[in-house]
Length: 82
Image (cartoon, rainbow, N blue to C red; front, side):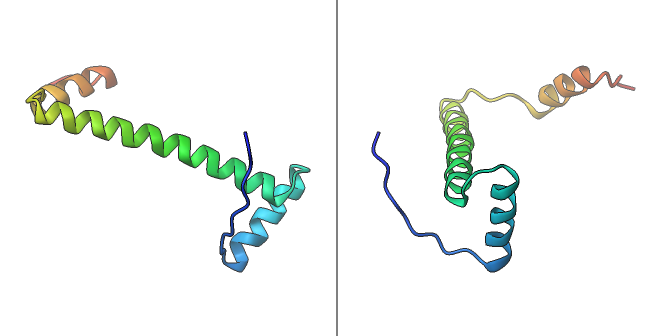
């Protein structure tokens, strides 16, 4: 795996907070920012995949009625229907 340097423009407050966090973790600011970006990309990647699957399901007509979704949700929460 090769690493590439990039440039990011941040406001003073964010950069200060990154510096404080990095110091508290005994890590460099660069390490902390790289880890933050990795976590963001992983999380957003999952989100984009799930949205894509939802769109495909809707396009194929695989939908669930709102009342059914609500009933399932309420049953998981232990809410009784009155």
